[in-house]
Amino acid sequence: MMALAVARSLLAVIAGPDHADFLIGDLEEEMRARTGTRAGWYVRQVVRSVVPLISMRIRSGEFSGLVAAACFGAMLPLAILDRLWSLVYSQIPLKDGFERAPAYLALNVIALCCCSAGAGLIFASHERPRLLAIAVALAAGLAMWSAKGSTPGLYVVAVLVLAPVSAVAGAKFTERKAP
Amino acid sequence: MVTRRLFVIDRPDHFLYYVEIVAKGEALGEFEHLILLAVARLGRQAYGMQVRREIAERTGRDPSIGAVYATLERLAGKGLVTSSISEPTPERGGRAKRSFELTGQGMEALDRTRRELDSMLEGLELPIRGGAAG
Image 1 (tube, rainbow over the protein chains, first blue to last red):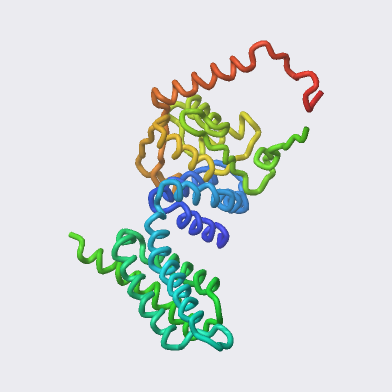
Image 2 (cartoon, rainbow over the protein chains, first blue to last red):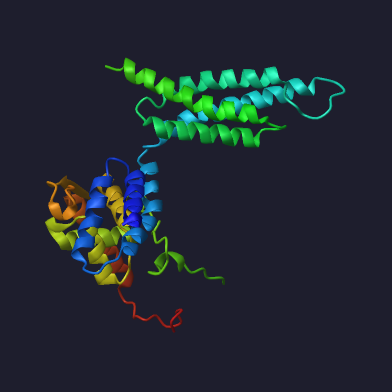
């Protein structure tokens, strides 16, 4: 029963609110019609449905707001700031290593919060906040992973917490303003 | 000459079965064709699981409900099928059912695909001599 409940929840998440009801209903009906059908059949159906259902939702453009918010709100600003630091650093003679100054990292966090909030305001006003937060955090994580130089733990935590929070705050602000 | 076989997508035992032969423009993909035929056969009874069952019984394939549903959604986007939502029933755990029906455009697409296949098969003797099986 536990496996069934988990599979049902997974299906509800991947199918989205528009389709989950019909799909779960179809599977429930089939389970009742087939006597002796085990939970394994249900779970296999759900697992095999993950790829087609996600690609269906991507094709329908359902995630375009999330992707735009993640790119413009987190990935792009961090990439630009990283390039800017590279340019500044290249002008300094007799340097050792590639360490970003703490003040510059703090500036990164502030700029990132502003961009994430702006992206939340513009792109993802109608998206669900949890998905928006996950998308922005993933994009920020990816940008930090591909950045040059070391990334202090405090900086990573600040980015991974404050960027999604700012994006969600921006989205919530737009929702509140909407009639 | 090197021949590549598309064996992965066509095996019923393949775990993540999903035919990604998406039709471009007006042409029907292989799986789309099967789904449209199943909807045509079932008439007003066509809904996700029923379509899946029809394909499984007639072709021996075992498509997932997600693949069937995603393809039905794509066909609805092309205007080849329409859908209607029925009232929730207890045997479905109190959930509604989405039924699909063929449109005039869908019937034309089936007809066109059949003509194309007939034309390609005309004069051919199967199994083809010198083919993979022969």
